[in-house]
Length: 175
Image 1 (tube, rainbow, N blue to C red):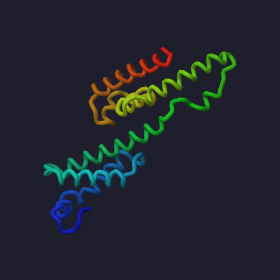
Image 2 (cartoon, rainbow, N blue to C red):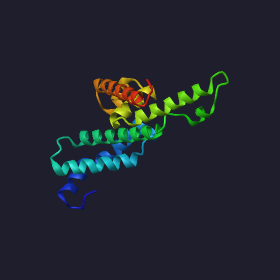
Image 3 (cartoon, one colour):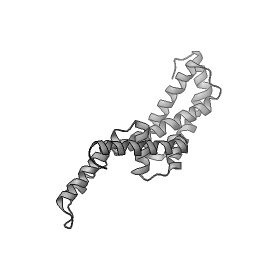
Image 4 (cartoon, one colour):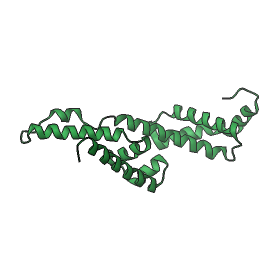
């Protein structure tokens, strides 16, 4: 909160402070325990106050809600990406089917490792879109809504991801 008695402090008390309970309730109802509401609200408050310093906000309420939504989605995305650090299931690598030759298992595991590296090498947004689609099985519409991007952008990012992963796999000796 800005220092007391400043113009920004008065603006905050009039336009933003009354919205905090609404935003907290909205975030809890929309995202539940998936995101830390306190962190999201704090991040949103900082962004709103910085934006107010740069320019007059025509609709502080709409801006505050949009920034809070984006902060929550970013928080969820970061959590999902952190979980997908490795697509290779270490336990599955240790299991060898009696009917498969060991060299086949080793080759398949090596390919999975290279694919994981290929996905990790993608640009951040592309990697997120690609992982949400191919690993978590999310629809393009859901990804677009969650990330705040268009369906066409999701489609383009998937195409870019497939192209770059294919090129990466070819460079490392696997088609």
